[in-house]
Length: 311
Image 1 (cartoon, rainbow, N blue to C red):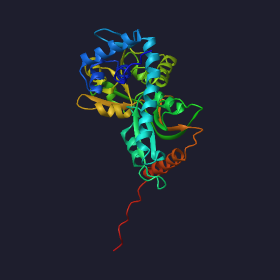
Image 2 (image 1 turned 180 degrees about the vertical axis):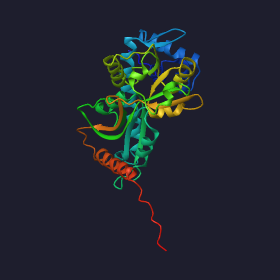
Image 3 (image 1 turned 90 degrees about the vertical axis):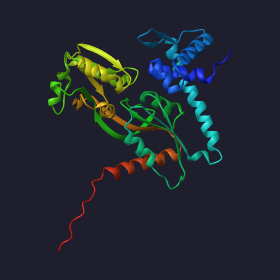
């Protein structure tokens, strides 16, 4: 059996994440025609169709979903092997492989970067990015040491350090009647144009939103799916759409013509955790999680104000 080249495998993975040839090509640093050729070459080599595509959309076939799922694991193992080889002269125990979602709050990622361990000077953090549920599975599989996960149900094989909890935010036109409120609820969104992240981005949270909407009898007049906050902008401005976004995503597009309000629903909260294998034997991982907890605690403590000196 002839195995496909890494460039072909990586192209399929990126296209599966973006479901858009132009965005995937930009991420890969190639032009769209080159990406198309790579996908055709890969499908010809495997003798199976991985993607269904037309001028409007790209979708994974069942075979494509299976291929990409296992290909990600394979690439993660190869990246881990390369990292281990490069780290060997410095001591492999000083390397942490951490996964994160593209929707992770940048502040939380900066907190992780700022953690220092006296017992492990010169610690190196190698980051990889994917959807939250996938980086969680990679921690279970052992291809990642830790993962920043958002909107993922807790799994028995993982232990968690809670980093943050935020509501969803609804991005809307600045002149929308809902913009006059400080917060909104699902009932306020009834019979409006909804813009949601695709289910593949976060199956758990997508299903939670739809389940709560059904229970309360709330439905959208239209439902549009996106994979990034920027894709929601024209739907908000041109169709008066209401976009369900993370706080970070909503802030990213809040500008002239678009504002945001928190969605206050008890069952719809985005919890971000630092996840590790529950049975990890790595002292580095355990110490790093403890140090992260201490770092967060110190950052959240109110600053003691300076009192004016008496005359």
